[in-house]
Each structure stands twice: as C-alpha cells, then as structure tokens.
Amino acid sequence: MTQDIDIEEATAVKGNYNAEQIHVLEGLEAVRKRPAMYIGSTSSRGLHHLVYEVVDNSIDEALAGYCSDIKVIIHKDNSITVIDNGRGIPVDMMKKEKKPAVEVIMTVLHAGGKFGDGGYKVSGGLHGVGVTCVNALSEHMEVEVRRGGKCYGIEFAKGKTSKKLYEKGDCETTGTTVHFKPDATIFTETEYSYDTLRLRIRELAFLNKGITISLTDERAEDKSEAFHFAGGIIEYVEFMDKDKDKINPKPIYLEGEKNAVIVEVAMQYCDTYSENIFTYVNNINTEEGGTHLSGFRKALTRT
Image 1 (cartoon, rainbow, N blue to C red):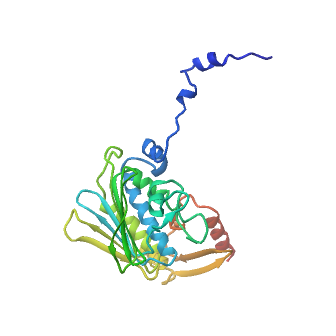
Image 2 (tube, one colour):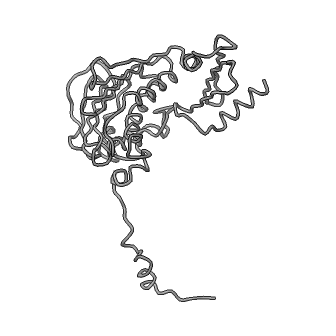
Image 3 (tube, rainbow, N blue to C red):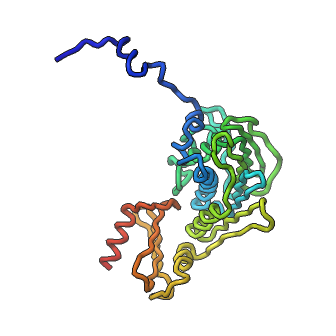
C-alpha cells in the first residue's frame, strides 16, 4: 500500500511542527537555556556543582604534578574564589580562533588540554567543558593567570567576554584564580552550604595524597579549615573505620600500574557484618560500580 504525502499538509498538522520550530543555539546559549543538562539541576545541587567543576581543574593540575595547594573561599555575597598554584591556564594566542587560549577555554565548549597532545595524562573531566558551563551560568567571572613571570586578567559576564585579556603586572608565582558569582536568574537557590562543600573538599584531599585544600567562609568569623592527608586513601579508610573494632589494626594498601592505568587500594576488616566500599575513577565517585569494582571483588575472592 502506498500513499502520496502532501508536504505542506503534513507540516500543518499536529502542532505545526516544521522547520520554523528548529532552533540552533549559538555559543553558550544552550547552557543557559538548558542548564540542568550540563550541571544536573538549577537547585542547591547544581549550585554546588559549579564549585566542584572549578576545583576539579585545579585537582587535574595536581594529578599532573604541578599543583600542591588549592584554596576555596566563600565570600559574603555567596560568590566563590578558587586559587591554585598550578601552571596557570595558557594565555598565548590560538591561531585558528585568533583569541587567547584562556578566553577560548572559558567561552567555547569542548575546548581544552585534555584531548591528547600531552596536556594532561589523567583528568576528571574535559578541561573547558565544566568551567565553561560555570562561566555561562555566572553573573560575572574574573580569571587571573600567573605564568611566565607575568600576571594576566580577563573578565566575563554570563559567558561572554566583558573585558579582554590584559596584563596586570609582574609575578613570581604561577597558578590560576577563578572568581565567579552564580546567576540568580538561573538558580533557584544561591546560598552556599559550608558543610556541603566541606565534604567534597575533604574527600578530594583524601583521594590526592600530599596536596592541601583549604575552605574559608567569609560569612562567618574564623570559619576556615585546611585538609592535607599524606597517607591519602589509607587515612581515608582509617577515618571511616575510626569508631569500629578492627581485625587488622593497619589498613592493607596496594598500589600498581599496568597498561598506563594506575590503581590504588586501601582496605581494612572490621567486626561488622556489612561492607562499606567506595570506588573512584579520576576522583569521580563511581557509585554504581564498574569493571574496576567487579575486578577487585573477583581478585579478593580468589586471594
């Protein structure tokens, strides 16, 4: 059975769905139009996710061996500053885009140094995707880059460059400072929870032994903590088991590398009947498990 279809008639029925209903969102419009697709939600969860995205970039610098100190500051107006002593985001011009690399990273999705070419060996995400979304969903953002003996600044408003890259002066240190204020027209909640940020920052300090991550809340007097765990996940296990009776007093620790995959395991037996197991890949909590967890269980049973 065949039928001849009248195109104009077909487009006129069922809600008039035709080419006029197809929209192409340019630049970061898609992020601002559908923010939950990129950060999960526009509630408290998404609000705090903005901080995690910026901190994760600093953590990736630490994983690459170039960052040892990260500072997170909650300001009185609920804006956030993240400071690290990494290499600093590149500021040289990109020939094709004809813009400084830092501007491209902050304003173009899928632009960054985590797609090969030796920028990062390990990363928890795609450099420039997460932080670009943060920029798009912020009223304003200022980025300071310290590298090559110079200090540079660049500013944005709702994802668009409001002040081009400029030189601020000489600088002896290296690193990146990102200051941003979430857009109140997008988020249903704009007040940060110190305890929520504290949990993630402490977790990151456990997972990345040797680095120091501090959290300061300027909304309250003397509310500041610094997290540093030389033992890494060994101390993480000890922290989780501190109120339990241990079968083996010291956690069992294993570390190895095979096929360019680095694995760390810390475990301890207690007198409880239920297990408490956490797995991570590149600092991301894999709550639903995966081949790394099933492989561990299999190896443990065989042993």
